[in-house]
Length: 454
Image 1 (tube, rainbow, N blue to C red):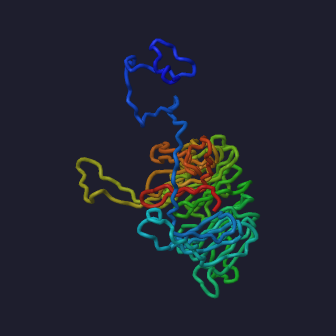
Image 2 (spheres, rainbow, N blue to C red):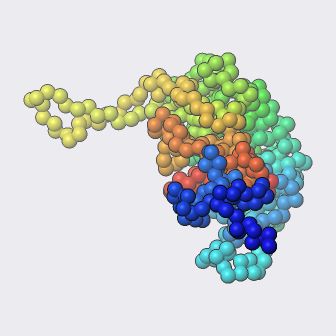
Image 3 (cartoon, one colour):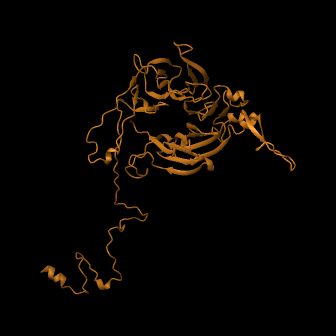
């Protein structure tokens, strides 16, 4: 009866508080049809507060290696056989394994029953020990990968032969311990100095070694140079593409370019202010100074300049000496005058040396200063095919700059190393530091590695 009395209410009767007020269709100015796609829950900024996007992540890996019992700190590939991989970790051990695994036509996620058969771990080719602390650097020497270098936080450097398999693969042929901790190892690409490499240490020292068992089989490791201008830990280094010069940076904010083989000096390129180095910049120069240190460096494929990255997202672009311009080059002398006859098409070519001052005129000059990211620049890489510079930061972002257009910012990927794919400031997301960027393939795709423990 109560329901009947409610339905019998007059149109002009005001409903009670616990009754629903209804609008007669004849009183409506416009009837809007229901639209399930209408974003009714959007806030003023256009964000859907109630809808959460779920991202399905697929593991399409075809194999894995899990012999390490602690975090992996470094990875190195053989220069001729890149499928041969060396890894060093916090378990004080180096492993070598072959990553050349037969891959299926389609990734596992495309299968009807993905991972129906469990994958097996890759078995190591060799297990190398002898360090008393974490392995912080591994590298194969150039040009043929004849030796594997391992450097640890114990300051020990070990040299293993990759060409000898008896009685065990990768036998230890030499070692050295000159520094407290080894921060990086850099094989030299100079064709005239095979199996040469640079070492950067926690005490700021820079060492250049050559491996030559033929000179002394009992002590094949030879010290070519040692530099001591950095006053704090040497954090990163890079050879010029021709291997003639070595650039290093330090926590003290200094940047030096070394001439290990004397080729810059022979070309007449020297620096009166840098001492042992042909280029030297420190925090004493306010135009260059980066508060709280430098942590990364990369040299352009042309060898004309280097990028150094430091704290607070600061990047400096610094000119380098051009040793190729200090050698003899061909110059064209064109014939002038209306009555002159050009007997040689294109003019007469003569070989003339370029003044060393011209070759080194931009050396040490600050060509650009960049700051897009908010925290330390841990890694830098130039594209070998395009004019791009990639920078990876502790803030979890990657920035791409165009070196051909005054280092204009082309893209800033703010959550490149996010654990959830969301923006850094969104609830539930967690950003990791980007510790390694590299360009791979002819298309120059940027590859990044975050600070996630392996």
